[in-house]
Structure formats: C-alpha cells, structure tokens
Image (cartoon, rainbow, N blue to C red; front, side, top):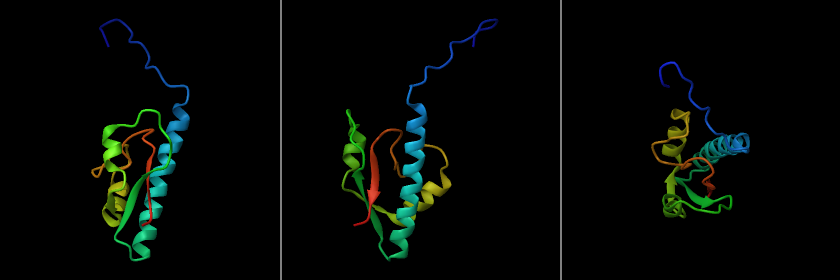
Length: 102
C-alpha cells in the first residue's frame, strides 16, 4: 500500500465460496479414503480426475493414474492445513483431481 493511499481490493471470483467448499471437501475425502486404504491393508491410492475442467494444468495431467502412498498422503494432508501439500495432492484449487481405491 502506498503511503497515504488505498490499494484496490482484490478481485474475487463470483464462485469463490464454491471453489473453497469443493476444495475442502476433496481434502477431507482424500483423507478418509487414505484411512480406508490403510485399514484395508492397501499401500496406495490412485489419482484420477473427479471433476471435468476446461483447461487442465500439465502438472495435473502428469499425476493422473499415479499411485500415491496412502499413509504418506494422509500424513501430508493432516500436517498441511493450507492448500499446499508436500506431495502436491490435491494440486490446487479447481484442479479436478482426487484419489480412488485401486
């Protein structure tokens, strides 16, 4: 902010509340699925596109079909309350990626 002036307020998307809710739901869904995988004796979960997106990020496309270690992903999500996680899943708002059991 400049001295003596005001900065412009940030521009918010009209659906920001929906993006936030979907992102948080997906994080909790992934946590629950990882806990289920561990309980069932599975070592990993598989990344898939759970929601259609218009412009898929190349980083997201590269993650499709990869097996992620369930215990590490669960720990990562529990210890990273924000959007960014060490393992990169979910890879940011509106990515459309989630996980499924093998």
